[in-house]
Image 1 (cartoon, rainbow, N blue to C red):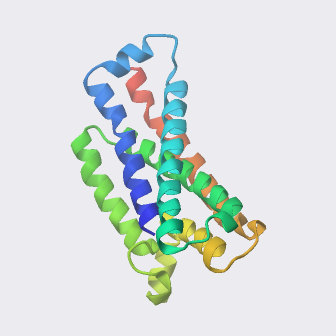
Image 2 (spheres, rainbow, N blue to C red; image 1 turned 90 degrees about the vertical axis):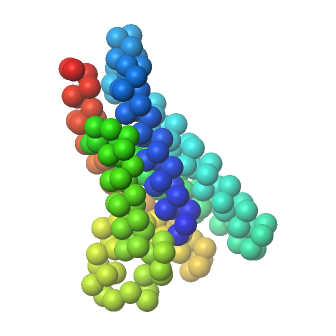
Amino acid sequence: GIAVMFLLFGATGGGGVLLEERENTTLDRLLSTQMTMDQLLLGKWFYLTALGFLQVSLMFIWGQFVFGVDLVGHLDGFVMMTLVTSAAAAAFGLFLATLCKTRGQLNGLSVILILTMSALGGSMVPRYVMSEKMREMGMWTFNAWALDGYDKVFWRDLAVNALWPQLAVLMAAGIGFLLVARALAIRWEFD
């Protein structure tokens, strides 16, 4: 649960680089070259996805050596869940960055949203101890879908094909947030 929460914080912080580039006119200089906003956003998305994948992988490798988590035995499910979760978190970070006007605004909004999603989604308290209403609300968060997928992989020891609902929701969320981030970034192209 903590891995997913920190993944969201890391992706949002990384997406905030867009705001800093806008503030110090680096973004204008980048867009004055042959680079398009699509290329810039996709490049940042790939970078944040790879960084998130590495971050979560290191946390699970540590878990294998220190706590005995069977990472090697569940490597296929782990890779699928981590790749899709990292991609969705990266898109979420870019969405928040393009939604906000300043780094301070991004920091405040991201802390509120990520901590709320983490509380409802099971990163802080397991969802099975929550009321039915809280569990339903938690299904609107990245955390719930990602943790359900990791739960299927490591706790229930289910086959990879049992992950399709979690993978589908996280992929759809990632694509949706990336498209909205692109739509919001139009304002930077025409300033």
